Each structure stands twice: as C-alpha cells, then as structure tokens.
Length: 395
Image 1 (cartoon, rainbow, N blue to C red):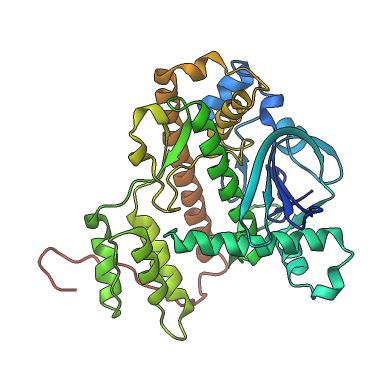
Image 2: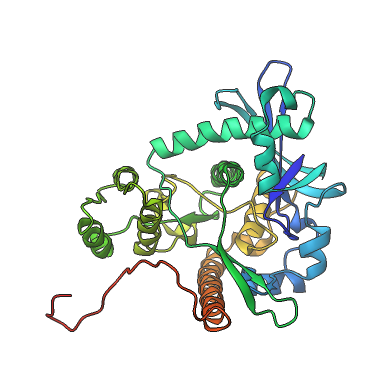
C-alpha cells in the first residue's frame, strides 16, 4: 500500500495498492482514511465539522474542517505507520474489466508516501529495472489500468476540463510571494484521479442499493445553451466550432480546437468551458428523480464523494452510509431524516462554494502582490479573454 500526493501534503486521505492474484488478475485497493473511527456521529467535533463542511485552502494557509491532530496525524495515511482505513477492493483483469468488488474496514501500513513526481519516476522506469521493485511494479500496474479506465470514460462522454492552477513560492518571513509558477501535472496525477473516481462511483452505487432515498450523492446538471454563448463566440472568432449538444460532442469539439504552436489556447478553452457550467451539487437521493442524478462532467449516472473525509463532510456521511450498508455500524438516526439531509446538503453546497471562492481570491491577491512588488517591471505574455464596450458599440 502506498500514497501519491502533492509535495508537502500532510492530510493524506487516500492510499492505493495493486497486487497480482494467482489467477493472473489484479487485486486493486483504494484505502481511504477512516475518519468516522474517531469522529462519532453527534459529538461536538462532528457537529462543528458538519457546520464547516469543508477545509479551505488558501495560498499561505489551510483552514481545516477537523482538528489538526486528526487532520495531519491520526487520520492521515502517512508512510510506515499503521492507520485505520475504509477500503474498496476490486478484482480486475489486466484489460481493466472489473470481476468483483468488496468493501472492508481495514488497518493498513503504507510503505511509501510518494509525491506525484516520484510516482512519475516509477511509471517512467524501463520495464527491466522494476521487476523486483514492489513500489514500481504496483505503480506501473495502476498506471496501465488507469489509462484503460480513462479511455473508457472519455469514450462515454466524460469531459477533460482545466483550471488555472498556479503555485507560489513564499518568503519565509513576510509570507509575500517571491515566485509564481504554473502547477505541473504528471500522468501520476491522472492515475490517482482515475481510481478516486472509480471508488466514488462504486460506493455511490452500493449505498444507493441499500438506501435508495437517503443516499448523499453529487449531481452535475447539463448546462443550457445560453451559458455557452460567450465561449461559442470566442471560439468562433478563432475559427473553431464548439458543439454542446451533449458532453461527448463538447469533449470532441474541445479536442479538435488546437492551434499549432500555441498549446495554451486549448487549455484556455477548457478553463472557459468550466466557467460556463453550473456547479456540481450535493443532494439527497430521495429529493430527485433518478434521471436528475446524472453527473454531466463525468458522464456518470450515479456519483458521490467518498475519498476525502479529512477535508469534506459529505464524505464522512457517505462513510457512515457505507458502514451501515455492509453491516459494520448502525446508521446514525439523523441520517434517516430527509429534512436533515436536505439542510445538510444545502449547507455543504454553500460552504463548498465559499471555500472555492476564498481559494480563488487568495490566488488573485497573491498574484497582485507578486506583480506589484519587486516584479512590477516584469513583462509576461497574456491572453485577453473579454473586452467590455459600451452597449451597441463594436469592439
């Protein structure tokens, strides 16, 4: 078992393993921090976590949903120590066909807390170099499966969107930014994302079978045409047609919108596409028809959040539903109330949006500080996204 995270990550929610079974198939495990082992329903910590609903990530600090001792130590799946986990275990063929799935409360001992860059180094190792290396073998098998799962998802119409993620280097005393860089993405990032998506979908289906009207799920409504008008006109002025008839056509038209020698243009269109969509929402399954449960961006009929209980309260609720579904814990009384779940989902949506906006504002503030300080004379290439003009005046 090993984890793959950004450098310096302290709140490690998830770990993975992939071993070869005697029949030649793989056993794949997604292990998630068992927060509910420490945070019991209805306790003071639980009520405060429900109120906060999410951790908030600013450039210079993290505002935690749970106390620091739980966030960075007792719950965090750190390397070389035993930790309580909630695990989803699949039997998978080398061609990424799922044979079986099991859900267990476990104790895991992670043999390595890798960064994305370290994991990428293992993926890129020549085949002969990694035959006896447990870590490299596991990561290479996971990468191979992730590629196949991803190709299948994209074939079904899942979108590959983008956000303008940057990282700042901060001065150790003043905490002012001394450098700003685009966040580097590796195949290892996509590997982790793929297995988290698989775990979320698998758990969503499981809790729904046992609690068809009480499940905490996540939906993403299909956007209406009006929301995409500005993107369609911006792409048109560069000679590209964006088709938004369904998520598959949107994905294909974004893939086709490439300008040779300008790789960032395509990323920019994906960032703008993200901004055209309604935000995804938490909801109680009893409040919507099954046709409205669909997650447009992921092209998934059922989706939930299970993989980040240290920083999201929705995942804590899903852990409790799953524990009740497999018979290891009774369902807390308040999770049987649709009106409670309605209010809980509304608060989680509100707090999630507030945390998102706070994070973006923090990035904007630090960008302004960076360019107004010693770097005020610095020149950079930039893209103009919009030109505001008086009404009726051609730009």
